[in-house]
Length: 274
Image 1 (cartoon, one colour):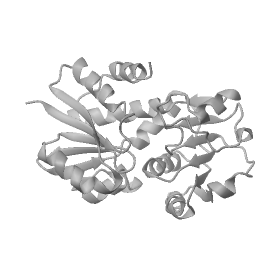
Image 2 (cartoon, rainbow, N blue to C red):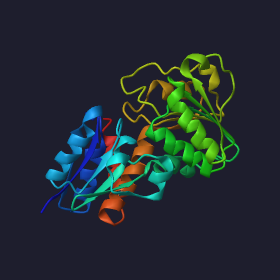
Image 3 (cartoon, rainbow, N blue to C red):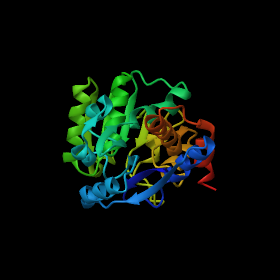
Image 4 (tube, rainbow, N blue to C red):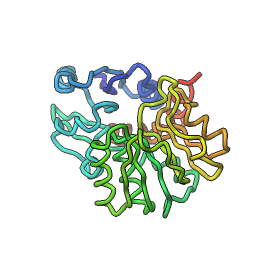
């Protein structure tokens, strides 16, 4: 019997996950399929019931459900508990278990480039589920300070507290009040959806230079406005698809309990931009 997997979220049309996982299934000749399933923000409970009815084997969770999904899970891994968000779920006879692959997926391309996180100064845009994973990642790697920029202070306050609890010097500044800040940052990271629709990224070009690492977790388009701004000053660039690949590899291995076909999955991601 064919096993079905999915990615849930809204928007979902842009998702490369079906491409990636279906390529992996084909590569290993597995009787599995992967679909994109749109669940609007306030319909998560209804959507999960529908997935259980079709006996979904597992699913990924993206914007805007990574935090809310926690309320519907029967169990979670330690990373999900620490981060307060989950992006990978297994379904065993109606029992939903959540995992978080965001943190390691985020760190993978930084580690591969042998970039030093210790004592670094970080600028992070956004305060959603992915931002929580990023803060935990930087805290675990002994970064020096993180400045969180978000439209609303309230949402960012939770992340500021999370960072402090993990021993990371953290502050939250509203997007409105941040424009005049002229500090230099070792890492400039976008964890919001800004850039998906080719929007201008709200950062002053002079906050980035050739010593900066610019990392945008938006993966489509591949060259977002923030990435372009980084390239303008010869910053080190990390593309969103690299985090997506790291997450996908871990999701596959959680579901299948076998090594993921990394090369086939990477090829599927890059093919999605052509």
